[in-house]
Length: 585
Ligand SMILES: [Zn+2]
Figure 1: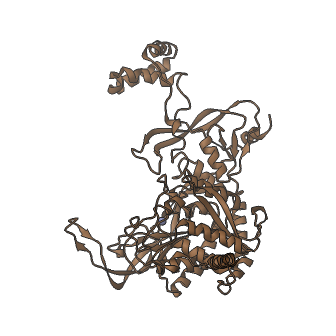
Figure 2: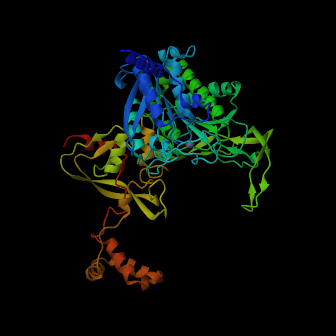
């Protein structure tokens, strides 16, 4: 009977070992996905404050999990009383210090023998949800050759999923299974603060970390000012802790930063841009690719800890501001569907390294290089925005049930929808959106061929079917709804190609059928005849083309498809019409 005792002692020693691969290898390596899975499940088994939620499987069949830390073991969405802080890692699986930092944080919050002073008290004020790895299949495409720019770990995951989707472009269109699994959770649990941990690429400079906290004109004003409070709290502290940081700049000449920095706007295809429209303050963390893994891990750990501390200290305000933002949508009449930098710039001192580019015999061009000599470069920074695409909220959007790509996504995002009350198909006169000059991209972007078009409003006869939906944008997710359904918004469903079949003509007229009909139209309609003759006189190419001439009549005949290039989603600006459609009749 000795053997089983010894065995169980070994087992219990293993169970008490909470060190991760990055620690065992002194920051040389990161663990495989199985390590993260086991770690979270062991925390669940060992602690009354940890719960693992299953989000579903990835395309390659790996379980996706969320680790929830809470004082309430039987934590359920409907019963949660505290703000929920969501820490997301490995959306780009090669940029993986967030996973190791957040697992260490979890351990140091809830395990009595590993607890850091004061950390457990965070759970008196907040609940925490940690997604250890988002792009789990990509995490296991682990090789030393995935990110040539990056300074460790020795092997790392890949940027895109097994289907080659970049998850950080997929928040709105949600084509990937990983995103659908996540959004299903987001819809139910509605986090109150969101962090997305990355590693940036780019040139060399002193900053260990860059950040973006959305404070855009596309957002609710209360959430913007709360987000500013977070920046004012956290980022100076990061400097003091030795993590030199600055905003995440996009427009930037890395050889010559004195030309100015611009902090761009992130639309809702991106993580932080998406949560901004859910009235959830958010933080993009981009540690610097050339800093070593230990430095990046520490900066990520400390900033995520500061997020938790700020959320705990501001728990009541966070819940209040989000509730107010939701309520304010009830009174909102217009929203901005885009943003651009204003011309305003502020003086800024860029903490750079001395540039030392060299001429390459291989490329024949100059290769960027920096010495280790630090340099302060006086420059300017543009980080103020103005709203664009100011758009009026309709009373409701009518969504045909037949547009299942649209309907399923609205449901996935958690949009509140009402079925129309009509019991039989009913035709009503309503203005509709017509697209013209429709062209398509010649190569796919994130798996979609995106259309380009102009749009205008025109009279329409809209057939409403039982089971069609009405979506009122005066609800907490109203801004998100507008960005998904207004064709002018960059990330709208129609711009992403979710409605591409509406641009395809499916029926046509043979010349032998059209010619006699055109003759009849000319005979019966003198105005049409005059218009045709004018066109013949003015448009030489048209006059020479038998096909174009017959097509001209086909488009004006009742045989032509009235729904070609017409947006099937109909914004309704009339309250009586919406009331009529809601009423049971
Ligand atoms: Zn990234």
